[in-house]
Length: 103
Image (cartoon, rainbow, N blue to C red; front, top):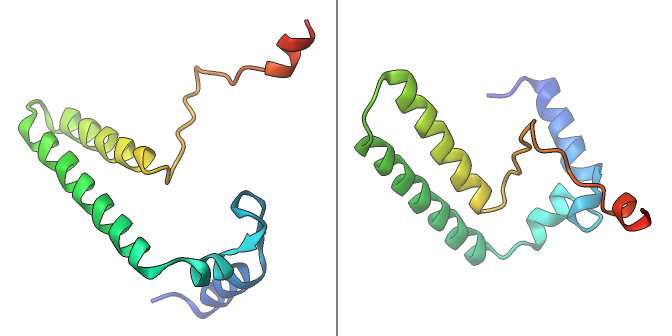
């Protein structure tokens, strides 16, 4: 259960905070505009992909640390496949396309 202040803050953010990356809509507006059947099918696809990734991890061998690392990678790759997260790898800097075009 959420602390009352946290629940109130979450409610305000969902109702009032406009998200530029989401078409200028708030989280509440996005939730109301989403088709429930589509959300359920996406949720079931994500769950199936997560179960498949977990099964692949169980087939691998190694130390507990190595298994946790493989499991974490599998779950993150699944989330990245569904475009729920974007991983930023520290050694890969984004290319400055505008600067290259000018030079």
